[in-house]
Image 1 (cartoon, rainbow, N blue to C red):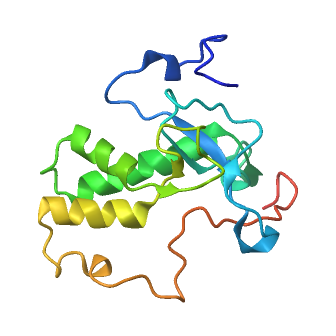
Image 2: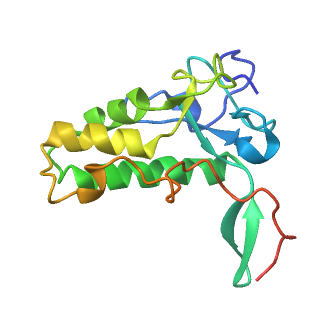
Length: 173
């Protein structure tokens, strides 16, 4: 659903508050499929209303009855951004205002051709880039955040969008 079209009111995205981040659900084509990252077919979008995308398909989630299941939706994408914001707030030691942390999340997205025109940033959450920007802005000493002083190791996957592609049936333990 194009949230810019004005044909439907979708809450809470319709509030357009300065402290809000509206998140789209993205597919990650990754190396396995050979395709580019793109918007999930079920996700809302809007070039002026949806800010960024985060992984939103086949996300391992808790499920009623003490189960785990792979779920998809914008409700599985939004916690990636909320968690990133909380991490950045912690990394900054509270020295940066929330509005600045929000801007850093938006300015450091991984630009993705498949999201152009679908979000205000045209990109996906990039926690690595956001953490580097926040560490510099907050003056975090290298000894306190050693993981931010070196580029990612090829053995460590830092791309939050690379998630399992072949989920087991819902209700798997």
